[in-house]
Image (cartoon, rainbow, N blue to C red):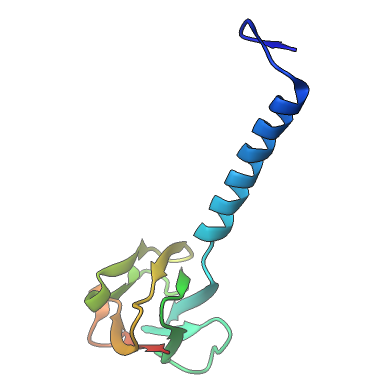
Length: 132
């Protein structure tokens, strides 16, 4: 077979294609977050989508874990965000009926960090606990 005027064997082409496919799969797998946490804002509080009855819950994660935080705003007329100031991480502000997300890498050492909604930090906040 000829590619750009060079003669190449089909075996060499197949090896090249396989390397590109494997490289792409490795990159996709290593960049994927370990888990996804969906937070819903309503009534000037954060709620876990899986626990709609506990306002501003404690969020537990593992040290070194990659976590995708999804923020869904159900507060009509209000703008909210999600930030962990000590880790310099945040999910962008969202208007009512919108969603935004960001992936965070948790610290490798255990610790407790405050999370807040920056526009409403006095009412909307809780703890992010990084466990071993």
